[in-house]
Length: 469
Image (tube, rainbow, N blue to C red; front, side, top):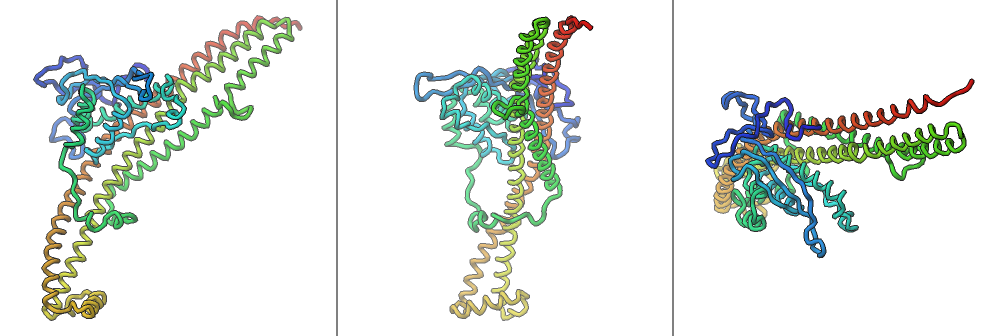
């Protein structure tokens, strides 16, 4: 809303950012953009409550066309920030970045922090690239707003705002060198193919569902579904409102802005016919033209930005949904590995029972009996081959037990992190909806106030028309 540029979270007490920045990094983590915990102490904070360690207020501005007269022309943006986060070397970092730099930042934040909700970037708008309009002031301003919103969402995230990649994005004067270093030495160990990869988990899990779903995440998924459904309905209705207000190309009678313009022309024509009231009708026609212009202005400055923000919030929710889906995948990996371990253990027990002469006591049923007959036909039913097979199965069981333990720990850790992410997403969502709806309300109020002023000015002119009875 107006005057709320630094109001990041609702129902939050902010402290002034004017405290001096100390080189020894002893500043306290307080200020605009820093979500204070609702709990007073570490002991009172819940296990899944996120913790902000400072504030990061970001700005994207001043789009400039670089290498303007060459085929390699591109647009750079000035990204700057105000912060008291300890990871930054200055309280006011800034640098110029192009769109591809934002793409690199986003892609590698997703890789480095798979459990975090990393916001999506705006589309490349291929049509503008083909027609050359990507350098138009209108397109660059839309892109600037989209990129500002992208960085703003990152700055509100307590983990992403403190990442070394985000710090380099704002501070580094050798960004390309840093990108190559990040590619060569990514944070954390390189992922290695696990046992679940060796049993073709992609095929295994393609159509699988979690067998023991956690009610907490089912509720979250339902909440996300309802939120996105609401956004889709709002987007559809407001697009309809926009089309009827300033459709530009709709059939006659379906474009209110054009209708008011046509009405003004018609009233002007009446003024030429009615010589006694030509001047009042001319003023009335001008008021209609002004009202038509106000409608068009409201569409450009209020409705269109609202629709863009609404769609952006929908894509942000999709990123949140992707994290929930990845959490389910982690649990599914654990369940599938557990089932695989159970099957291998049963096979090992069956072979042990056959060797000891107690095959009938294994309780493994018809399938085990048929497998024994198949092995017999293949000539693989001698005890020596069974012992060798049991030895291999024992090795596989040990590997699977380790893999199941790791998968269980990974699933639990990912679930805990996902719970924190949902809290963070809820904070950010509420802040953005406050901003989005506030801007819409401000724009509507400005429109109706201006419209009232226009119509109030015409009333005395109309009242001066003399009517002889």
